[in-house]
Amino acid sequence: MIILLRNEADPKNVSALKERLAGWNVKVSSADVFGTEALKLEGDLDKVDFSLVKSFDCVSTITKTGDPFKFASRRNYPEKTVIEVGGVKIGDGSFNVIAGPCSVESDEQICGIAASVKESGATILRGGAFKPRTSPYAFQGLKARGIEMLSEAKKRTGMPVISEIVDISSLPYFEHVDIIQVGARNMQNFELLKELGHINKPVLLKRGPANTIEEFLLSAEYILSGGNRNVILCERGVRTFESMTRNTLDIAAIPILKKLSHLPVFADPSHACGRSDIVPAIAIACCAAGADGVMVEVHNDPVNAFSDGAQSITPAAFSEMMKKIRAVSKINETV
Image (cartoon, rainbow, N blue to C red; front, side, top):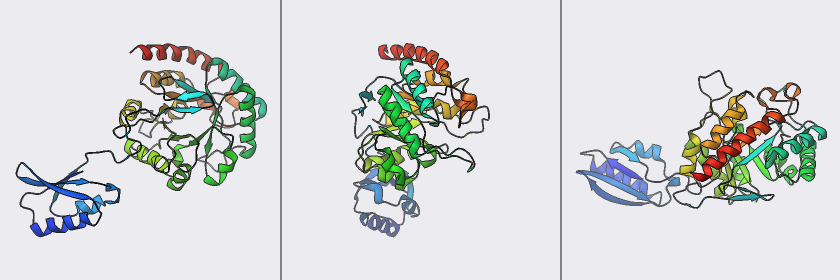
C-alpha cells in the first residue's frame, strides 16, 4: 500500500500519521516521488483503518499494491485450485455441469431428473431442500426430508450432490451433501461463512446481486481464512436497470475472477436470466468465456414446478444444450 502525501504537508500532521500507522504494527518506509514524500506500508494491513488514514490532512492519495484477499488471490497462490468430489474434478480444466430442479419435490421427481441429466452429461446433481424465498408465502422447501430424497437420488445415480444451506443450524442435515451452496442472499452472511470455513467440505459461493467482484472475493476469503480451501465461486447475475431478464449475468466477471483468483469459477444462467428460453445460450456463452462449469435448473414439468419453473429447462432442452457445450469445450481445449 502506498500513501502519497500532499506537497508542503504539515510536518506535525505527517508525524501524527506515522505514529498512528505504527500503532497498527505495520512497517512504514518513506520515499521521494517527484519531490513529494510517499509512505510504503508492509505487513498485516487488515487492521489498518484506511478511512481514518484518509482523514489526515497530509494524505493525498492511497494506492493499493496488493490484493485485499490473501488466500483467494492468484498473485499469492498461482497454482489453480482443483477440488475433487465424488470422483468429479472441478477446476482442472474440464467443464462440469451442475443440473437438477430448483426444489426437491418428491422421490420420483428428483430421481427421474437425476437419471436424465446424468445421461445427458451432467456431473453433479443439484436440488434445493432449504429454500430462502422473497415471499414468506412461497414454498420454503421440504427441508430435512428433501435432503433425504436428494441423498436417495445420489445413491441411485452415483452423482455427487449440491444443496443450499440457509442457516448454520441446518449443517447437521448436510452430512451426505457433497457440496454446500451459499446463495446470493447469504453472500455476506459473515457468521455463516466463518462457520463454513471450519468444515472439510466444498462450498459453492454465489455472488450477491448488488455486490462488486472485490466484495465477492472477500466473502470467499472468510471461508478460506478459516481453513477450508475448497471454495467454488459462482457468478449468478447482478441487478441492473434491465427488465427483460431477472438479473444481468456479468459474463465479464468470469475471466476477471479467473485472472484474480485461483479458485474454480462457475456461473448460474438460470437465476441470472429467469427465462428458460435463453438459459442454454447463456450457459454456452459462459463456457466460451472460460468458466469451469455452470449450474442449470432442470425440471421434468416446469409449468407445475414448486418454485422457479419459468427459468427451468426441460430434460430434452438440457440434452440439446449439452451437445453444444461439449462442442465449445473442445474448442476451448485447443485454444
